[in-house]
Length: 114
Length: 110
Image 1 (cartoon, each protein chain N blue to C red):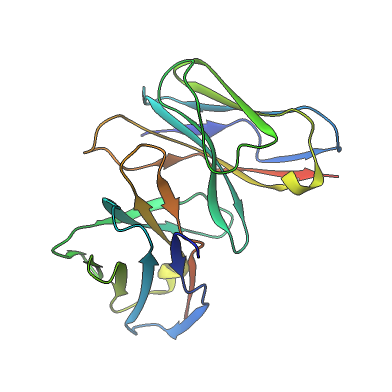
Image 2: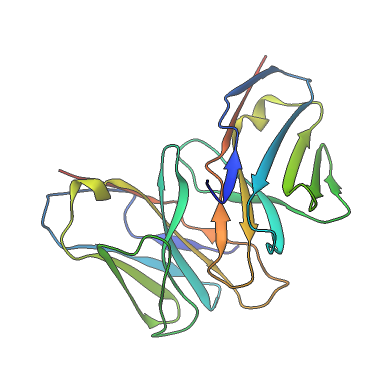
């Protein structure tokens, strides 16, 4: 069965800390995504990557960066965490190609920044 | 105006009822449409794609109206296990333009 694994289910960090959220997929997918989900706002795209070392900004990239050194791993980095980055973070992947549009999600990381 | 809009609900209906909800999108160039289901504190999972001609999967029927720019989901003979949040998803021309609605919460009561 396909699997997208996020390293932490719950995370509590302090304002100003550097935070790493890790995501690994075992499906050899080219495309990987980071979303955040907030009540009433739905899922919003932070960054995505369509290949190793390639990255593109999504709708809300400010305050975030990403790293894709290997195909299976896509990391989200909060350089200096702030309280408004408290959210549920969801990683997703899907293969290239118009016929494969299903997104596979990890189980999410609930991040609280105090 | 949001690119994808949904009635947040909650819709609270009895078991066995038929329930329908709509989703509107603003970009007429949108190419693909989907319904995802998200259970409480879980990740979204694809429920079904939505095709121009409409499509059915068991008790679920999805429709697309390009002229009016909305998609709909109909659930017949609803079950307790249908309680979830249903996310409308619209995809544009590029890999990144996958826009999620904020979801419609459905609660089925015995």
